[in-house]
Image (cartoon, rainbow, N blue to C red):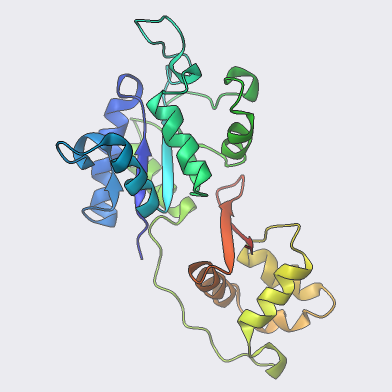
Length: 245
C-alpha cells in the first residue's frame, strides 16, 4: 500500500525541489497520492479547508528546507516569515504535528537543519517533535537516488505484507495479544519490529517472541496501527517505532 504525502515548502526557497519531488513521488505512488498546493488545490477552493482535508487524508508530511527557509522575510514587514503566526509554512507544520502525522524534514543540497535556538519562541514543542525526526538531504546532482532513499527509509511505498506463519509455540499463537502485553509492560518506550523480535524475546514472559520473525511482528504491528490500538513515530535514523495508543 502507498502512503499519501503532503509536501510543505516555500516557493522562493524550494520551488524546483517541490515540483520535481511531486513528479517523482507521483510516478512511484500514483496520481493523487501527493498533495502539492499549486497542482492539488482546486480553483476557488478555500485554502484553509483544502489544507485540513489534505492533512486528514495524508500519512506523512514532507517539509522541504532550502537555504533561505529559516531566514526568509516578508518584504512588506521586514520580519522573518516563520515568526508570523499566519505564515503558511508554519501553519502546515503545526497542523501536521497536531494531527500526529509523521513529519519528515528534507534538507536541500547543503542546507542544515535549524537548531532550536534559531526558531521562533512558541514553537519549542513543535520544534522538538520535528527535530526528533532525523532529516535527510536531497541534492540536485543525485535527486532520483536520494528520493529512492527517502521512500525506503520512510516506507512511503511499502512492500506487500508477508502473511504470518503459524507460531511454533502455542503460547505465541495470538501474536496481537502478546504484542499488546509486551507494549503495555514497556509502554514508556517505542520499539521497532526488529527490537521487539531481538530484545523483546529476551525479556521474562516474552520468550515466545523468538518463535516469530521480524516481518511477522511488523505486519501485526501495522495491523494494530490500522485498528487504532498502536501508533507510530520515526526514529532518528528514519525507522518506524511503535507504541500503544
